[in-house]
Length: 136
Image (spheres, rainbow, N blue to C red):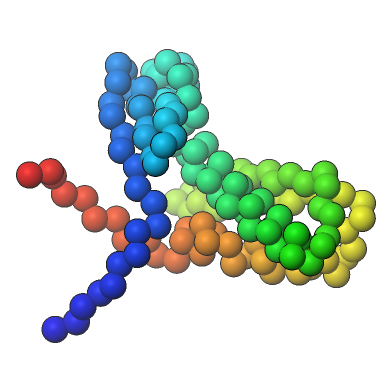
């Protein structure tokens, strides 16, 4: 018999509100998600795909800033812009990094390598199994 070790990476509780508005709690943080009015929501928070892109962008920015700090590189001003696109039945993310003028081409190349290995990037890049059950 094979045993699998599990490591909890994150947890959230989502409580449905009026319409499509959702109340999200994760750790000590609380925020809302919703659909835009054009899709029948009340636009009380970002839509789920927007949250996904925000998560990927935040992970990318945090990881690259940690790496740059260790190397004593100044990335300022630094931004990560993301787009989730669907082409037929295939989805892809365009991620564009913007750094300050003090970042060399060699440093940019290394930052691209690191961006490809950030935790959320790796999670989204490999097959993610989602198991859904009903509470007892």
